[in-house]
Length: 146
Image (cartoon, rainbow, N blue to C red; front, side, top):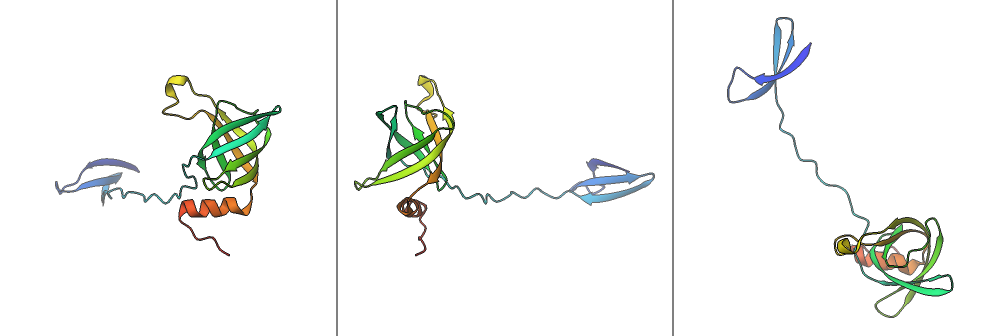
């Protein structure tokens, strides 16, 4: 048995023909339906100042995006991969949130591409205060269950 695509006897319709010996069966071609995009993005692009210590020096950067599980930090000062990092996220109202995580990705970009693609590092969070999740709930337009 083989399937071939050819015109049906009715020229206004496109069909599949399944041929087995001398028997031919015609099946209408179904138009492809677009698949709805059900993906809910868990990242929000926000710029917050981030501080952390590296070899006794205070390093700073800015968040590129934030999510419940991690942060991408734009910075010239990149910690070592797989290193544990304790950071302070400075809020616009003047507060600070202490976050802890593991550096899972480093991204170095040439100078001429920095406007297109961020240079920095990704941190998978291991500790975050409840206020961080309240901040995310506001960013996502969600009500935080109390």
